[in-house]
Length: 365
Ligand SMILES: Cc1ncc(COP(=O)(O)O)c(C=O)c1O
Image 1: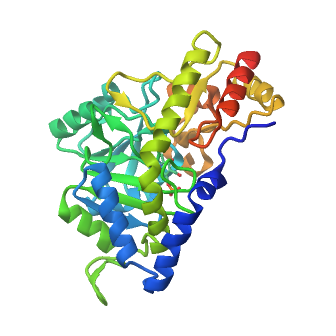
Image 2: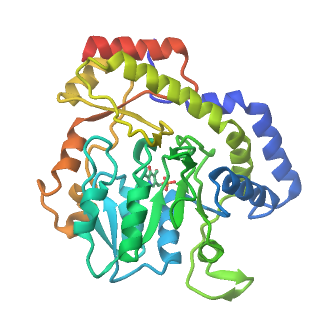
């Protein structure tokens, strides 16, 4: 029996009755853009994050890009992002018209290294945009301190971090703005695309909402040149159902990660390093292996499906050739891209599947 990387249908199957009921309610209510299902989810997710406001948008990329625009960050401005983040983090900056400044991560946590951030700040830097990569919280406290010292804004890319904790507080209210993705494979995933922004400042939340609604707060009156980026109410209703199960699912992820850590401690793959202040959401369980591709092939022979997050760092993508950052310039991101491997983890894995992965890793490492 093979082990899939992630069984997305399992979550839907598990909650099928609740999801059917929630969708039926939206169908009957007759609000197919905006309306009560969206308002309810926004309220619930804001409360879950400990944030004053939540605004649903169409996807995580828009959540990031509209957050930047809401903070008036655009052409001529620089934004610091981790050099090993997913391409969407960088795309959000360039879509806003600003310039991404790629700073290397801490090689053990894979997250933006606060120790390197200050050297990258220039007179044009406007914001820090850390990603809580793989669901491991970045060192938000250190980044907030740097942002305050240099009068910068802090925008969290929490697309992979639903339910993650930093020093006892949930990600979602620790930065000026937090951007979320509800892409189906996320810890809190919709049945299609979805995203949101959480913030304490009502003006930031208002601006995101206006920007995502053609730049309009009052119908047919446009204050800015906005876009159409709204969270679909059917998706919002599904997300309300799933939110009720998120903590339970994250607990299951945590117990799988703990089991892997215990089993892999003395093997060749390097297991994720978690600072004592971090409570990861374990969106991904990412090991490093010096012979990553060979290791991956051996696991595949044993029926274990794995993925690589991510095989090519943003600065080496053709899309960012114009940044003119040579191969070798960001060695940590480049080494991670060559050595990381994501093993199956998810709330619906059975104990038998977890054991199968553990045995395959032992036999393949
Ligand atoms: C770190 C990170 N940022 C942003 C995004 C963009 O989210 P979306 O796919 O919903 O646009 C993703 C996910 O795909 C992500 O993993």
